[in-house]
Amino acid sequence: MATSTHYLKGIAKWAKVHRPDEKYGKHSIDLGMTKEQLSAYEKIGLKNKPKEADGLHWVTFRRDPTGMVWVNRVQTIAGKPSVVDSNNNTTDVTIGNGSEVTIELQVYDYDNKFGKGKGSRLEKVKIDKLVEFKPEAKEDGIQHPW
Image (cartoon, rainbow, N blue to C red; front, top):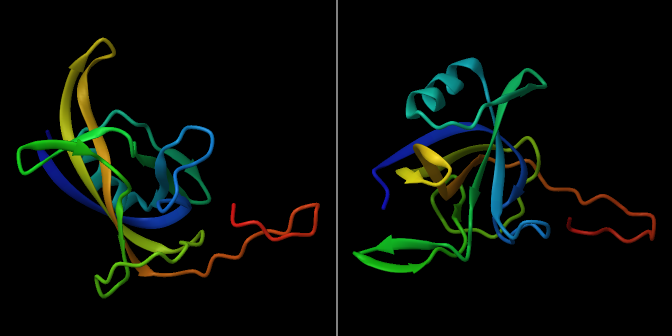
């Protein structure tokens, strides 16, 4: 069960929020944060270490669509994270790299065979400023959405 909710702003990269990735079956988004934005992340106390690239600090946030979550004191399947536009309207637009987003994280404490700490689950992505997604043409000449 989540112990707190946190909101982080940054730049989106590799957003797989509508469909899980093919390799691990998880929804995810890489969030690039400035040094100031990173301080809000560090205060949460998660163990994921940011990687520095392109002048930003990058952290990947995930959600297991087959995992269980508590909703109104009942366990249910997690499903995918909510995605909304800047007016808080639900959207299924593909988020392009470089989009400005705010993510909502549910943070919880864990104590299991891997140790003790804080974990997080990606709950919601708000698209503050969308960069249009442009699929790359593959060798077969077809533009694929991945």
